[in-house]
Amino acid sequence: MLTVRFAPSPTGYLHIGNARTALWNYLVAKKAGGRFILRLDDTDIERSRAEYAEAIEEDLAWLGIEWNLLERQSARVARYADKLAALKAAGLVYPAYETPEELDRKRKRQQARGLPPVYDRASLKLTAEEKAALEAKGRRPHWRLKLSGTVVEWFDGARGPSHIDTSSLSDPVLVREDGTVLYTFASVVDDADMGVTDVIRGEDHVANTAVQIELFRALGAEPPRFAHHNLIVAASGEAMSKRTGALSIRSFRADGAEPLAVAAVAVLTGTSEPVHAIESLDELAGLVDLSKLSRALTKFDPAEIGHLTVRMLHSKPFSAVADHLAGLGITGPKAEPFWLAVRGNLTGLDEAALWWQVITGPLQSTPHTDAALLSTARSLLPPEPWDETTWGLWTKAVQAATGAKGRGLFLPLRLALTGQEHGPELKTLLPLIGHAEVSGRLS
Image (tube, rainbow, N blue to C red):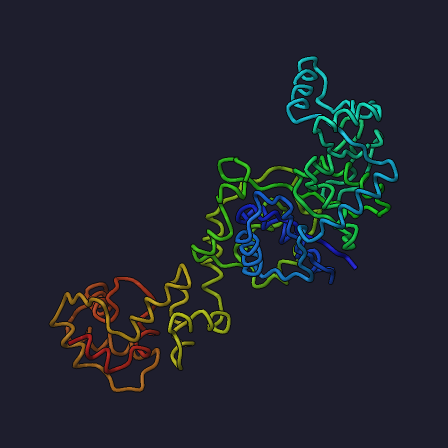
């Protein structure tokens, strides 16, 4: 079964770029009838926070993403230790003793000589006595994977045939001297254990792929298929970061964005598919195709989310918003006709509360601008029942009696009945307000 994963670190709030990766994975799995794993990369004890982990789950659920399995890497430390021991026994990793400062000096010397800053494997030349002497001084080794130095090839689902010569890379550190497991090692162990068949991620991870393929093989596991989607960046061209909180999913939630609008923009931006309104994640899943991805960086325009939110809102059926409206106090037999009357004038769902107040009263203010016209209009109010034809028949009678027409007729009536200069059609609002309330507002 096709199995994918999304593995964020809980060190900040998810931004739109994170959502892009999560959604691409989820939708590819949904389209194929596969599995989606949410895996929290929380091995960095200093920076990981429980509130960020909770926020990740909340944001994904808000987007409509459902996971088949939730894992936390912090609960799998013993498994990583076992796998490191197996690699040691097989002679595939080696201890290295340089401090960060020493490594930095090496890199600078290599760069000054015009050489690539690749680790020189000096620790492989240490004798047992030299290692013991270093450890006697308090040095503790970090553990590096010994790369093959060959060209690693793979077919990238988004980029096509790809390769990296591992002789141009430093042997990666898998475990720090304090025992902390690094992302590359934990991720590969987890992917192998959890049966991940496809890794879909941003192209900023392309450089890691050859290392990870070699690590899969070192662990005796078949590497998954890899696909690296293009990145979206802020309008300024700046890369996105969880640490800054910019363009976070939570900020879009707070602004009243429609989850499907956020999903459509996150997924379709930077593809050959135009960004457009969708009705469901099932529909969006039908559109995902790795071959549609561009190879270029794409700027993200948050205004598109606002535009799509409004368009989607205007077409939402009552059943899709009933629970939210009930939370605003909009219930009862008038709730559905009310929604159909006002939805086309809303820019956010919570604005419905204002118009419900207009319907049910009392109005906060009713600026009467033509008392004589309103008095005549009140005297000509037809008896109930009212429907959408009532407004037209009534205003024709008022026009005949007063000679008022156009703005001079309709604006005083709108101000008296709603307290607003603009809004939904009064032919739909009038029956909802009702005879007694309309009469009172005209007096």
